[in-house]
Length: 432
Image 1: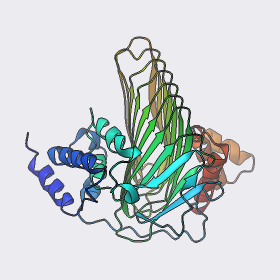
Image 2: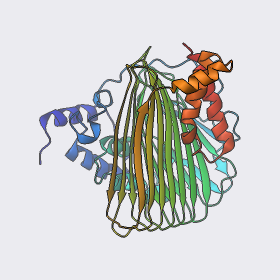
Image 3: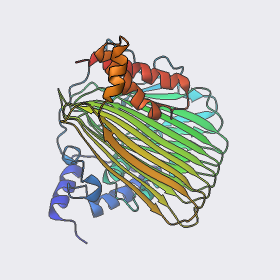
Image 4: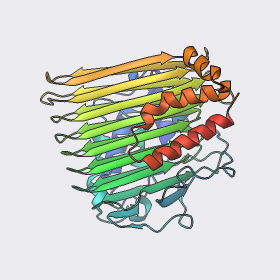
């Protein structure tokens, strides 16, 4: 079936601005397959079901919408207090001088740009594989675009237990940067690794993270998206879990004109656990704020547990979106699927759009979903103020209490505390 003309034109125009990386190495077939899928199905339009709440115009645009970099000189990098192996990308370009050596006990680390021209690499069986499978039943066009055109990324193979977290630090310096980065994580049986991401890779950016967690493996992922008010972002996290494995992913988002974080998780082994969570704070006073979390979890194994916990705090016309689905396939008995999305609206101009879904084909499951929207509890606010807490501080305490459930999904207390501290600092900066 031919593409509608509007999609054909948008896709052709966008592709005309991109160049394929080196095509003589092990990524060639995956890139060709992704490009074929993209040209056949096209980039999204506003009428597409999974884009009905988030207009893709800025992500489709041939010219990058300008985004002035934030001045971070008065603020240390968010994970600076964590003993981590740090890799730095400036507007999508690896900065070797600012990065640590790519050696970590129990983990093999390399860069996509450095090894993609080789004939063979351990990532060959993974690059683009989870992305391609995650396109069914929902088409994710920007993920396919990423697989085809990603210029660089980090490839992490955990063969044992990583002695330190790995932190990918993004630095945004150019107002028209448009990086496309693709990361691959492979966790062997019984191995474990923690990946941190911090900052905004560019003015507009597209990232994919494919994480394959083998039997009894563990993967922890914590991401803090930068404070850049004007950035546009589309991120994708694809996870595949083996028997008795664990995947936990948390994202903190502050500001951003347009952010769409997609999470696609599949259980393929029994007794596995996957927790996906996020917290977002948006203030539309100075620049627009639109934040979209789109999640699809597929249970295709027995006695697995999934949790989706997403909280958004919105004010001054900010918009939050949550689209979450739990699919339980036939035979996936004893599934425990939990999904909650909540928004705290600090004024009457902001809005939260939610579409929670359950699709269940097994009869012995415990699945639930819920979505709520509300304002600050006036009784709690009065209680705090009556005990001498200033109004602004009382508001901040209630906001932090509201976000607490999502932060509890972070496994490391030190990492969780670093995010809580940053949240408090951000709230202090933006006191009315």
